[in-house]
Image (cartoon, rainbow, N blue to C red; front, side, top):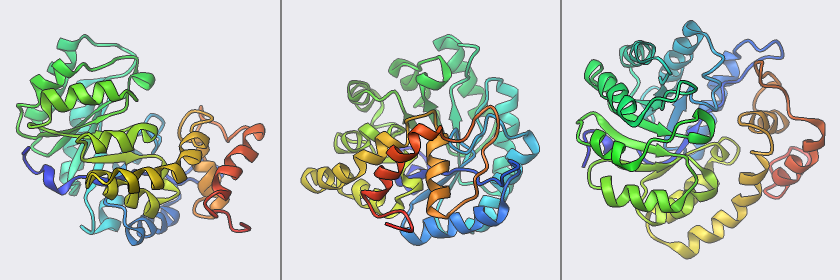
Length: 300
């Protein structure tokens, strides 16, 4: 088993960063949101991942959201800090700061836009792991980054002690099978794609870093627990209830719909930071319908 990996798993939320209408960070809502998640059974908080608008938070904001999250959580569940970047030195800086403020682990996305080779990916993650002694979760999401880290590269990295897991968001069960076969004894595999999360856990994945968990933390935890336990019948029953949300929350690029949904539910304000924009009007009813299926709106 990978070093320190046993503390991570189950239903982990890729938490939004609440913002006011002027797009400044809403610290009061962040605290309330975290407390709600822990009360509802969320098993890990991911701060400032893609869903947390990492791409548009400045360095100081990025570091402050992580630090505040660590303080609010107060060791009740693990905090996984999003510290990836498309520059290796930048990722090392963010990862060092996350360790300094007490994060339990870091989530490191593959470098985006500059499209490194597989050797470049290996050297990037190797350099971060050697520079910062903290458990590290690699993150492969080719639809957002333009680069796909192959299982063979993950297998090379799995031998590094403080690389403990991979968040795989390609959305391919075939990829999950390949990863479990090649690295499942060395690091844990987490789903980063809600639509295929159940199947990922049923074939050996250890958890889900979830967007949908933002709005239904308790139901997502129940589904993850059933799937990890190998209870296909119960997992499928629960996942069927979640499917409308898995679809509705990705009608526009994440986190547009999930932030709008949380605003409709009364958990956060309306803010989102450019170049992301509020949910388009013609998607309002489809997302409301998905929320209504689980009685998530105040008027439901």
